[in-house]
Image (tube, rainbow, N blue to C red; front, side):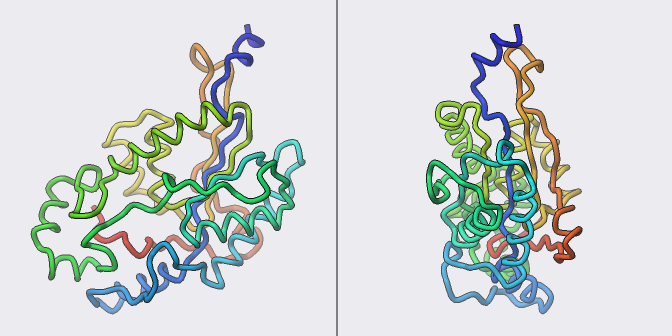
Length: 261
């Protein structure tokens, strides 16, 4: 029976979902919020914001952790958000760990990009309430799961594109060991999908946990779970590799993450 399940397995053997290292936008947003200014001071597109010096250290440290794994347990596929901070994190992890892939460089997938905030881009909570009070009110009414600012996305929109990505993974990444490098909202939306959560369940996790930079969330395929086997959560928001190496753990929201619930 177990052999039959293995032959019919549609999922990767292992999935690691990593939030990118600390970025320059994380630092800028933290400064803006602390000073109660309306606009986050960053001169580049959000997609082009690089890692901070600390973010480079965090990614390198996590790469050392992956490098301690036997080769037969290391990632065989690396997927990354096309945003610079995620691409840099993936490259540092791969290079430091010495991970050899069939694809020489990580595969960019735009479905892993940061949630888009439209007209609320670069605004702090103070800025949103001052410039778009009607959007602040709507978000409080509908919540982040359903509220879509003009030109932006709701969590449901992010979940929709991730459903498409999961479909591709069941086709192209069966029995692979997949490392995904993306953003905090992507980590949480993957949990929502893979664990078949409700809105209330995932928003409770969101309120109780800040997804840390370079934290690891992992799933392992269990052929004995369910009728055809399932991916089971192993670790969530795991930062022990950073702590063990003395790298500072950070969990600042990204530049475009305005009002909290």
